[in-house]
Length: 440
Image (cartoon, rainbow, N blue to C red; front, side):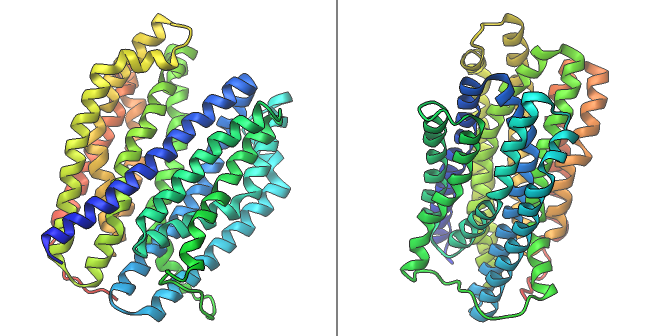
């Protein structure tokens, strides 16, 4: 593959996936906004209790989709079509198994989970309804993530982007319709969320109906090796999704002790903004995955290095632009969410933004490097990167730095964790950059 072709493909895949991920993150912001306006504090509490469960369902779908998509792309580039179809079929087997588990959990254990989280009274009823419906829609969430990844790896990133944005926008519109005109309460909010992946699948379906797809279901028995390979390559995606909810809970607890409700409210502004910032880097990473996997399958080290170089330059340029916007626009960003014009909240949020988002270039590098290792069939470094930034560094650093520097230490924990992880990712890269490419 020539450099011009590499750059053209990178620009196409990365830009489309960045747009799709930004649309997804914005729908989450809109979802929170409508629930807060229509259902008040109890509605927000129910939503926050459900976020870790949703993260696990969404992460499981990404694990199967990204892991299967990577294997599929490598095999397809080697013209091993039967093996590639076997990977797709096993991805469906795994999605079905996870779907059965989540649905049964929702039917029999949603109330127990809500009680475990400490909900009672009206919040218990709303949370139980939200969780039960989320669990029942788990098959749609799982299938949507699997198809998004396979369609993207099948040379149709524009179709994947259209499905992501359409599903996200439909959730925003249906949220408003079900919560306000229809007055369906918390059920309306979660029903709108559950319909989003269904609508996304409908957008993806013409790729299969018109027989433009290279992947097909074949008759084969479930086997351990293909399933293990899919899960191994996709675990970093699951860890990233699940850890984000856990880190949010930990930081909320620390901030509650330091500054009370106003500190947690300030962090909610930063966390919401972080969704959009991280979505940009995730879009770049998801965009390069099919390209690196294809070049890996074709034994093209130069193609892999070109794609990775374009991604790194993009991360650094976008990081500079994003941080400049946050640093200079912190007061205006805070005002959007600070409807009561709380001066203490504004001060904490503005100071927090300017420290927290120093992590931008490091976070971008880590997300891209994790995807680079996954896409080139070297999953172990990707696992370590995901665990370092998701659990092993951010949580201990948050407790340590908050004791040393108070509120400032809390905000510095994220850039410190991402910076140390980026250093580890650099070491992994230099240790593996000369490894011989031997696709299976």
